[in-house]
Image (tube, rainbow over all chains, first blue to last red; front, side):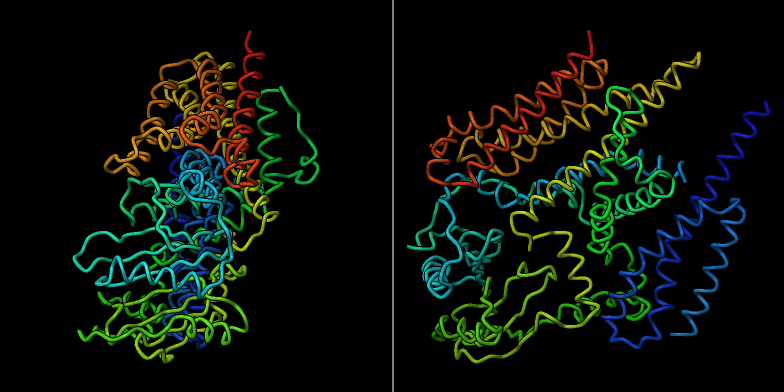
Length: 94
Length: 502
């Protein structure tokens, strides 16, 4: 049954993209804005407000990127890389 | 991308449609409020502030002298057309609210109703769900909408050419054209409404961002909110009675500090106490940026204790602007009409998207020997109740407002229960009826439910359409006329469905 095999593989790939975009993107949406906003030196409450308002742009872009990537593998690898880089940036800035 | 667009839409279509229909009704919330409280007179605003505030204080002093807090909503504009007072009883229990005649200060007896406010709040509270669960569900659905809009732009290659294309009566092709037309025509509104909707729920949806600055300890969130909404000159009651300062000089002082802008809301903490506090709050709907100045006075001496300007910082103003654009409270008539129209286009965009999905499945099924799967057939039927059943259920909510006995316990809650009970019944009806027949029957029912509302109003109250038009009561009359127009639109829909099926 080659058709069913291909079907299952496609489904797995879509699930991987959804995981990368949905969960990875959600994490990235809370990490990247923090990394970007910390250097501005805003008052605490204001910094949180700016980062939160930016977060949905990051989330939407991450979801789009996860489904636009050439393969599911690339989507996952790219998301992992973006997460690591933002975490390092946020940690360094804080 | 096309697949993401489809699934984001299909999975959240019903919820988003519910949010759009009730949210669009929210742009006419005070008008609906008024129709659901026909006891109220024609609103006259703005009234002289000091005069109305004095009447309200006299009433509160007589009726609730021992309350923990008083609030006085002054009649200022379309959003707050009436003088309304509220208080929090010292003995505990729910906050009380009474409408006052702004000229005489006499209370106006109104029926207990959930009104336009709860209908509008439904679009994020989802009524029966606990607040946090509702907020998360709404946040995920809004994110799905944003994603569907963005992927929709990507997959839609002939963006402007298709704008002028509408092929009617061609099945799947027509649904696609209608879907594109509704979405492209209102795209800026849809992007704004989904993004600003997310900003409304960002504290719950993106909590980790706050902990980057405030830490993850249990009380950290509270510290953030305390920075954001800092209490102003709060004090515990002293237990000693003291004469209250006159309200008129406070209102005059506020007007002077705000360069002529007037107060809209007064809040008095522990009234009559030596430590009473009077907060004079400006109009949040004065501009697109949803913020207002707040002045806190000593309730006994009348001295100014604390001040918060409308403008605090750019990040706060950015959030206030997004919230203000979402609510559209600042809009006058033409802008409000545009908001309603864009909201309706959003409803149409979601409904046609769902129908397009079903039409595609049906077309594909006709070419394959297996036919339509049971799940797909059921979804096709239930779309009828999701799309047409909801407006009928909202009409039932209006019928309940006129027909439930006036003294009934929990009357407002029962209006809401009836809305959802009728909707549920329509889902059952749709599940048991072939789709074509269900469309026809529910379209007829919708036509009847809305079209007969003015008649019901004429029988149940003395404020019928002719009376409203003669008296120049455009809010009451406008509701009746809108119901007639909706009834007519649904009747046209039913007639078209009738013609198509031999």
